[in-house]
Length: 247
Length: 364
Image (tube, rainbow over all chains, first blue to last red; front, side):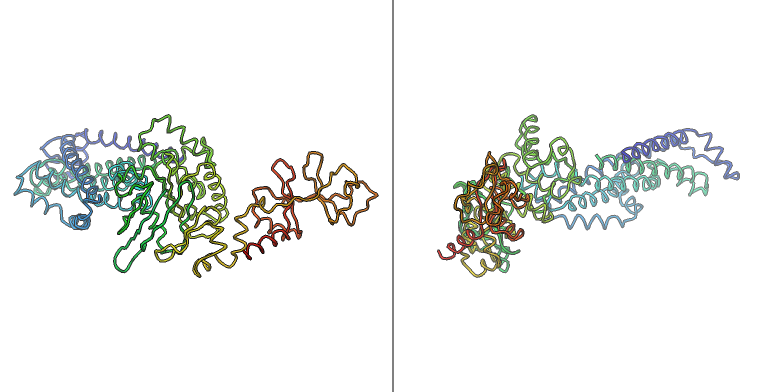
């Protein structure tokens, strides 16, 4: 009972936090006053590209598309290499996914531009590749860590490979897979700011503009909402994980 | 009937788990595969439901080669209880038991009924256990659910790999007794792997003693205990072979008729008895105690000479001779009464009779 209560209260807390976040980013006058007070010497304290609400929406859309695709593709890859038919690729895939994490996101972006040009598409592609890795890795770990006797029971009672996957392996690995998705999404919220360097928009735009024009107000205008966004999405997915895993 | 024909399993040239075994497992009986670890008993078991693929030979179930059967339907038709139970941790007890019925697409109401029936069979109250998760069960309860899950679709064959291995000795004996009762009722073809000789003797209709991938002896427990074929079998059974044999014999086989006295009657019932003591019954032939014949004052009423019995000094018809012997040694007596559950006196079992019969067995 205490478990249920604490879960409920963490959802309520999260709801209040999100509401505060939305109110905060939709009130541009507040930001203008706050940043103007912090940096009185700057002539301009708000990036002219758009309101924060628009920037956050652009940012979220990039993350949503890339993480959504990364989740679907990542889980599929993780599942395939743990099937008898795909098992020969398991070492290759798990090595690649650990290796891939060591690549800096800017390098991935730089490689994506010649292939996909500037803007939304190459950014989403880079985020997708980058976000794939924790999901693949956790899917493999989650499935491989299921006790062998549980798997033997599943097959021994006459489940097919797919029945064992959907009825036994996937539900048991779900918690670990979920935390892979959470890591991936949170990384992507941060990494997506780099997309502004190739014109993808989002919360990276004020940050990059601020860095170029040496205007710290712009940098904060992008960085604070990006950090808060990462926080709240992390908390949301963390809550979801707990709710699912405790049934 | 399950028949092994020249079955071999080699993992590579060095590791041979099973060497060219040919034997039969009769239907509706419990056959125990026993031996030290690494003797190939579990491999032998797992080749039946094709968890392990034999390298040579064939395994026939009622004349059909398992290799030619659809692997899924083969396995759905064979109950499987594995070591460490292997319950699905994310599913309730009910869903665990319902696994195979669901795979077989039974109707929901039929599954519900079957689950309650099975929980009752294994001695778990359906209302309080159906919705529990495996982590909320004790070791013994989890093993019971494992057995219920294997029985769910009423398969004719059940494979059990050290099913009671992971519980404390006390719980294990209780589970064995309950399982023996279930088998008495259901008469499944059971292949049971264990390394515990007492467990084998308690449960088996037939025992196959294995060593290094071969079956050394396949016989009834009585036969194996009486005539172990090789030194290894002899040693494996242990030095208390005679006692183990007695544990297979119900007291009813050694029971003797004997003189009794009606407690509310008079001393004159005795006549010229040579017994030193005599069992005393009431008018419904229920045991009330015993009377010392030689040292009692016959002037007093019979009731005055009565000694009542302690509960542990009375045997029930399903006790074994080993139990009888143990209780005699404990209470320092040379004979004990056997009494039905209703209290009705059946007869006695005496130390001299046990000695006489074990002696004649040896001389055979």
